[in-house]
Image: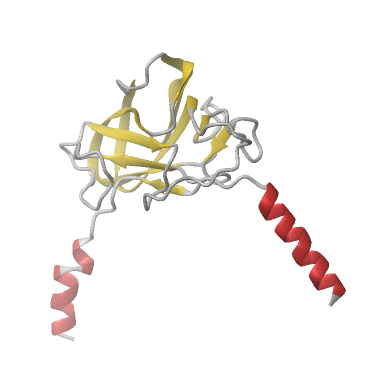
Length: 208
């Protein structure tokens, strides 16, 4: 019993001492500024908007990060992308968002197979909030989708993680708030609904 209580005490202490974060990174295809099931990649897609909210999570609740009084601002960022599914995505480049004032290239836009990465460094820190980091320029064939990758598995891509630099501490990286470690809300483009599972699937069921 004593051991159980001691273990619970240690877990509670760790929970209090560890940073808790609430950020949300997402992609928008149709230009409405949000991520929904309508954000599908098609042959007419030429760019994908990339947004990061440093202060709120996906459901809109405020961050509860314990930053020692430091803000969840943003002074640099890295983003890693991966295409998957039926079809393919050709990466044509990345354009920095108009609101990212003072940000210049840190890690060059690099493509390696289905993956791509890019990073920018700011000359100043922007206040906590929602930012369009930039637009990913693409050519699409078939019906693939794009997702965020938390950590690079390809040494040819210089950006190490999907993350942002902040005065707030990261869990494993100083002042580097990282997807998969510090926050988990991330939405890529929507997955298309295969015809097999809808119309044709229902017809086959009728004639079984």
